[in-house]
Length: 415
Image 1 (cartoon, helix red, strand yellow):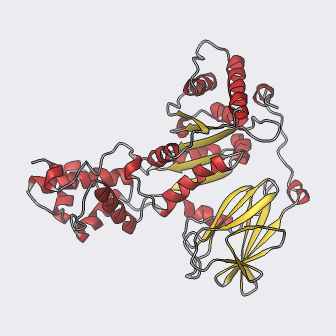
Image 2 (spheres, helix red, strand yellow):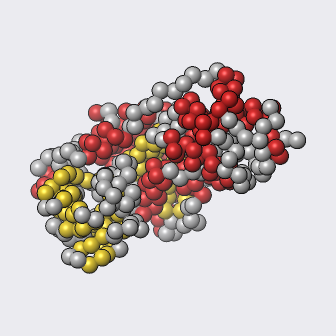
Image 3 (cartoon, one colour):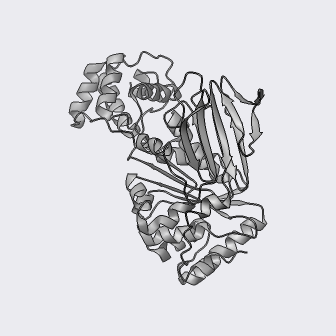
């Protein structure tokens, strides 16, 4: 009898290879994927997703790729220890070219011609770069220039950077400040919390064919979380080993002793819980001053009193109770993901995300509403006030008008 037969499973539930069929969408994983999806919605989509090793970045990426329509052309770069010319060669190779005997200028011309062709055919082009923390800053600058390639009306290349926390530090460096101005959405994946760890394990077992929720004891879940710190890859390794230990003892249920035996076998030490990366960022949002690229101000009011102020560039803003929301309102009257504000060009929309208490404008419930300057939208006992920022507001801060490098003319030649 095998491990799978013993526990009545149809396939291994805790393989380490990313498998979209097993993806567990926690609130933060769902938000990270929605940010990836936004690259398709917006003409100038540029998204950065970071997270620790084993946090589920690649699995989300594969799920995103699997959902792409035939109208989208996608290239994925995973080998990132490249110089600028090698990066362009790798990108063109992923798009089906054999560009390895070309100069840099020829490579840029080939890429521009390809993007023109795709745009003319009505296709959207997405460039995904995994393990982006390994990119040299000169390659990141090349990516910034590619993100500016445009037709007469819109950008033609969507970009997603996925990497470990070092990527976040790199793109925030002063020499890459122009790249940061191009980024529409950023998100950091934290480890799962304890209750999410249990849900994650149960989800994978269910996908693998388990119909018995009592395969693992409550005490075992506590130890799995304590020693994995909620990192999905570590959860997989530890839980799989614990099942093998229980199987060796001919047990039908994994208990605490089996998890501890697995920990001894793996030689692991207890993991110290990490501070969430997003918490400081969310705190900064409440006090972020007006920036050069800010296009809207959102005030959150309670009883007519402003309790938080937020400034945002174009993009997608989530309003809700969950800690990962861009505008977090910790109230039972607000759903975890209550609404989204989508701002592109001169147009901003607010959309209900299936909330319990809904959105109201001047007493009327709305599901999808085009915002006008000074509009007040009510959710629960709170009001959010939208203010459109004009050019004077932004220009007062002084834009960054530094000259592009000598390649920029080639990069921008699609018009």
